[in-house]
Amino acid sequence: MVPPLGGLLVTVGFLADPATRHLAWIGLPLDCGFWGMLYAIPHLVKEAAKTSKSKLVSEMRGSFADIRCEIRLYKPDYYVITLRRTLPAGTTGCSQGASFGTWTENADQIALVSHRDKDASPSKMRLKTGLNGSEVLESTYQEVDKMHLPEFPPVGTLLQGSHR
Image 1 (tube, rainbow, N blue to C red):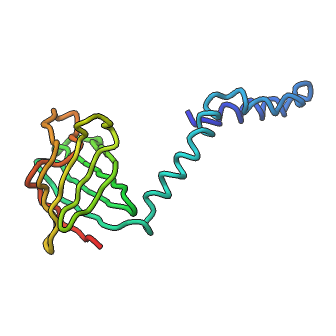
Image 2: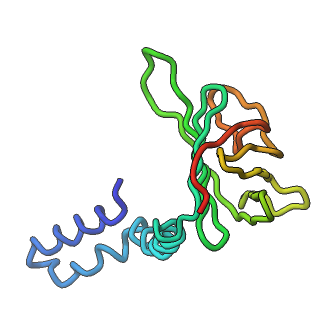
Image 3: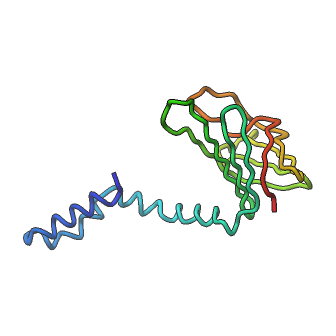
């Protein structure tokens, strides 16, 4: 359900009855979804600011097995990887996943480190960039079943795109 909708309906209902009109303000504060949405708004704005087009440094695309991969690098050190599985003919639905984290650049290589892992051996990927695109040199890619998507593409995956 839409978070503030329940609270708005209570407010409208209280406004409609003259006996409860003075309590109409209480609809939104009593709606738990409203407070969750109020908490999430700053995080959504922060995420939108991190991934704005003006901060886009590089966009690369490639594919492996039946999965399409798209990597976007943003200034100063934020990346987003989107993976989409191609579904077999005659089936419907969507299979998509994404991960994000930080990236660094050294000479002709780009290193990506996942946000998920804070331990001594985080999930990571290293790309070699060149004129014809990029190639995955190192990856913590793990085979997964058809219901799940990996976090990174496997070693040897070629990615086409621009690096500014």
